[in-house]
Image 1 (cartoon, rainbow, N blue to C red):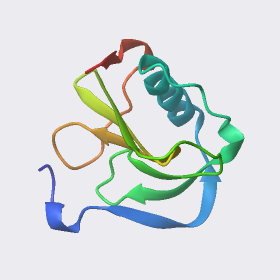
Image 2 (cartoon, rainbow, N blue to C red):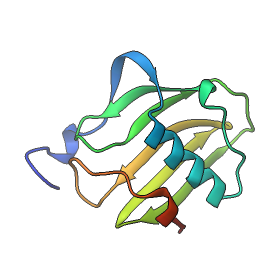
Image 3 (tube, rainbow, N blue to C red):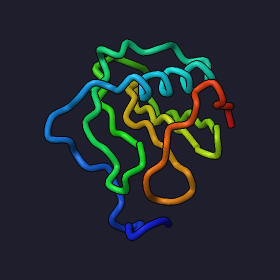
Length: 116
């Protein structure tokens, strides 16, 4: 656990206003879905509604598309960083970025991701 942030205070915090995915977030998300044989998502249906309080690049997502039922997790790794997409009932809920410690982390190169 890096820095002064303790793990029990870490979590997604709502943004005052939803925002579109940044280009690097969208590219990373689409790459994870591609590695798991999932269809690409229309970026217009996805909004970032929360960010992680520890400073990492994890984001909560509101997904306006309809989908299947159930819980899916798409796990990948690249550049020493795990990238996990959480999907509930066919809707993407979170793009989780985990380096093994709490705190700021750069997004990995999507081309270097591999399915785990």
